[in-house]
Amino acid sequence: MFRTAELGHKVSREDFEAVAGPLRIELLELQQNLRKADFKVILVFAGVDGAGKAASMNLINEWMDPRWIVTRAYKTPSDEERERPEYWRFWRDLPPKGMIGLFLSSWYSDPILGRVHHLSDPIEFTRRLDRIAKFEQTLADDGALILKFWMHMSKDVQTSRLKKLEKKGVEAPSVLKARWDNLTHYEDFIGAAEKTIMRTSTGMAPWTIVEGTDARYRSLTVLTRLRDALRDRLAGRQACERSEPAVRTAPETGAETTLVEGVRSVLDALDMRSPMDRKEYSERLQDARARLKKLFIKARDRKITTVMLFEGWDAAGKGGAIRRLVSALDARDWQVIPIAAPTEEEKAQHYLWRFWRHLPRAGRLIVFDRSWYGRVLVERVEGFARDEEWRRAYAEINDFEDQLVEHGVVLLKYWLHITEDEQLRRFELRAESPFKSWKLTDEDWRNREKWPLYDAAVNDMVEQTSPHQAPWVLVEGNDKRFARVKVIETLCDHLEAALARKAGADKSKKKK
Image (cartoon, rainbow, N blue to C red; front, top):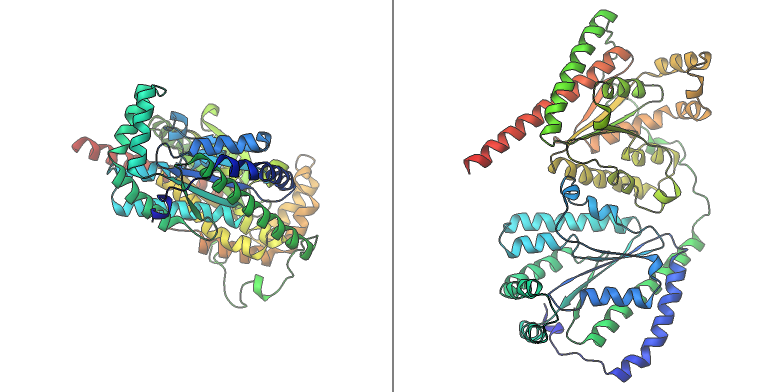
């Protein structure tokens, strides 16, 4: 695979200087055009030691305007990063649309080094590469232009370079020792690199193998590849903008967006006759809150993170359920994130970005009042997302939640359900109450008119995003007392299960 990067390519100083000026001017012009575009550019640099990864990133910052470039080079994860899923730090650092992101030692580094040093087996290595491919596909589907450069040198060239560095004494002894140690694993590294490139080089996120021996050849290869990709994407995007309508309209009500007549939705199967009298409610709520407090303290001390999300019909009682839940806990340990229409900053990112950035540290609890499911609910029904966008969101969401659960997060997803008649009754009560009338908006009435469309969307959501490790909890909400108790008791059950798993894992570690 790397033979073409061991041919000794060279570019003379004269040839380099002849093209450098015009190339730099064009890159700057393309960067200014990119600032007005609706996509981001992501450049990933990986490869052998000394092949010019950092030098290439520095050159891009030198030739282009660094104010519109995000540059990130990753080291061993900090405590803050280890307490969150692996990809949290990468999502956090993604550039907004219109900017360029340069990434070194990124999502490829740990999987490759783990395989090289035999910390993972081939099956685990393949699984991690597939996760990378999903991550990059998610970004590319959102419009990101992804370019990946594998910087290569032969073992002989690398050995010669290290000897020169050692003789000159320009490298710190510890750094030089680490490079010599890496060189002893060269064949393993190349084998892992070949598997990585074959598994993750796609039409949406291709690898370019760059011979890194000659600095001028390497620089021109990277910069012309970037120029050509920017030129092509900007030209294609402009053509697309001229052909697309300026305003996106909501989908028309039709058979394709509603359940087939005579087929019940998952919500129809709920028994909405679940009354709870005040005495039973008071007793069970008190017991559940006391139980929750004890369990959460144990979970907090064991560094178990809890992520909860609430979806449901307008006036279904999400706010009341959330208040009774969190008020049983120490306010320093939890946070409620209300989700509304995205801000301008959030619109410049993938829709999952704003949820990744809010993930808490270990042992904390976070509640999303509305969530990432807006993509397959309100954005689907109201036409804010194109068909291909909300349809692929099911797989994107499942992958996101799988990463949370894999990291040990207790994830609970609640849909609070009420009937149409109950919603109408609550709307009318809100309209009459001076303390609640502010909750009722014209949008609530408009959403009510689209009940069948939302019903179909909820049915698809539960069907497509309810795997064993992250199932939906459907809450019968016509009786608010019943709903509040069910929400807290369900959380308690999940915390108990998580604590048991943690205890079992700790025992297994001790035996080993």
